[in-house]
Amino acid sequence: MPLRQEIEIGPQSGGSVRVREGETVRVVDPEGQQVADLWAFVLDGGLVDWLSVSQTRDMAERMFPKVGEHFYSDRAAPLLTLVEDNSPSPHDMLFPACDRGLYERAGLPGHPNCRDNMLRQLRDAGVELPFVPDPVNLFQRSEPQADGRLEVFASDNPPGGNVLLRANQDLLLVVTACSVDFHPTNGGRCTGIRLELSSGGD
Ligand SMILES: [Zn+2]
Image (tube, rainbow, N blue to C red; front, side):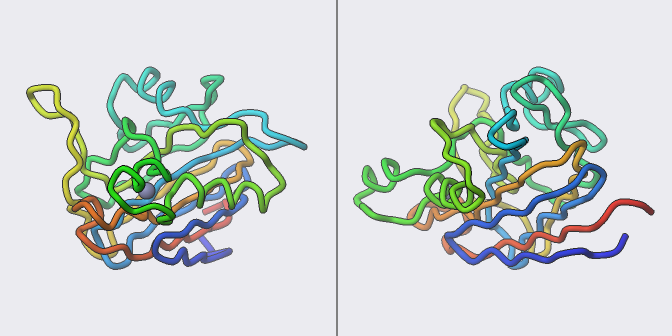
């Protein structure tokens, strides 16, 4: 499948790409242990629908879709298919994006964060959101513990670990390279994420 576009997302920042139905996007963690927050939006002159992690958990009846299954929208429409999962990480669909408050509570006011980085990408696309959907936290290791606790461990994604997604309709994808650097989440250092967009057809 020919590569149409490659987008390098720097550490602690965000990027976006418009994908057409049938196109694929590989989300790559080049250096390893870097969480990538993913959002998908259906836009048609304004916001129409968006990827919902709660609908996806419900429809898939799992904490995270298996290969061949879908990520669903707020209206329960399939937006993306998980085509390949080349990562040992469980991924996460329980935690919100990191935001200003998280860093303020950690004594780090003004720190870069995924929420603001995502909103900046949307603003550049001409969309103002009155809310922020919870993201899919690719490569994040925070599966629930046996006693019910939710704890975020250092990602175990190796360099080059990736997932391949196919768009089920035209979408705006926003991805952030998570900014957490005071906690083991990203292996103690923040690195970048690469998006590889390929056009449809075999
Ligand atoms: Zn983050």
